[in-house]
Image (tube, rainbow over all chains, first blue to last red):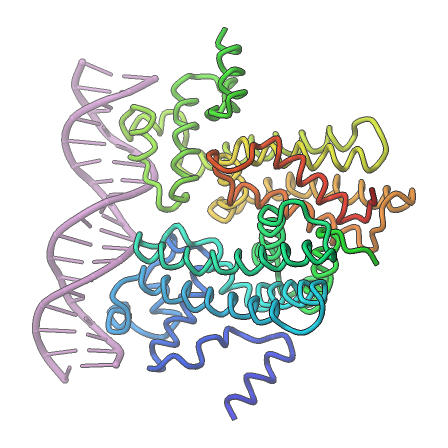
Length: 213
Length: 213
DNA sequence: GTCTATAGCATGATAGAC
DNA sequence: GTCTATCATGCTATAGAC
């Protein structure tokens, strides 16, 4: 039931963050959602533990039962968000069809996630520097995986003669940069839906790698 | 003489921020440069007035002789940075040649600025939300001007039959987003110089608007 | 114009009752 | 597990001597 309601909300485009459905204690889940909202709105350093706890309907002290520090809250958000987006990208890039089809699918999926989950994505992409050293290193590993996936796809497509790409690494960085930046400017009330932006950006990416139509 | 030394440092790629040469009292200039470095490194909210003053070789109190608040320091950086980058973009877009030449020049110049001045650009592009309401509104006005310049250039090029662009507004946003995001990932020690990245991105932008070679 | 000293306050995190 | 109360710290900004 809760599942259906969530799916319904998602279909209408008015979905709130639903990436945390599997987080174990309900209170921890509420805190994560509250922290995502607050971090996306104000940034990590401008967000107080009182603000997070308040949004979750709890006292500041309750936060520390579920998370050791404010930074650990950011780390969990960042880790789950990165794992999700890397997985979506990887699966789409490994899908059926030629290299052009797979690039289009990868960009469409990746961009759609960054638009639909723009609050999470904003935290994931733009609050990295607030992580502690150790946590930061772990996240960088995840980020390298998405770069690898995109670079390999572009290099393979070029080798197969489907793409006209001289610098696979630089082009992969540019394509991912374009996709990721959607989280910065996207607002739900805008001209286009996440779906439409994903389709549009897939076309742009194909042009960037020299696919002609 | 000081000019020559600065130009030399810039040519070697080891330049420090030189956008503040005209700022009146020397102490204010030192504070601005220190604040740019600190804000770019840690973000506005994680930067303390002690840190800024320390980098400038002053006591925390000295800061308040030259700036009313910490936020005003951010505003001055943001205002000057935006004015500079909008001006560069506008002049390049109004230069000689056809629409394709002008788009290439605009992207090359705009990207090169975001790479060369990546510390300033990072503050300019990613610390906007820390501005006060009034200051924010003023900056948004400047940002709209760069969107206007790019959208007009793309629409005119499409009307002239040089570009294949169905959605000038969306494409302009995407091209600017791609350029701006250079400030996020650029590091001086990387594989390519600001010049090379500018040239590369100009080619990508031409492909995005459907120019064939 | 710059300093030392500090007011006034908000913050992250903890203690201990329930 | 959650609360109220609070500690210790560090922050922005100001006062007043020089």
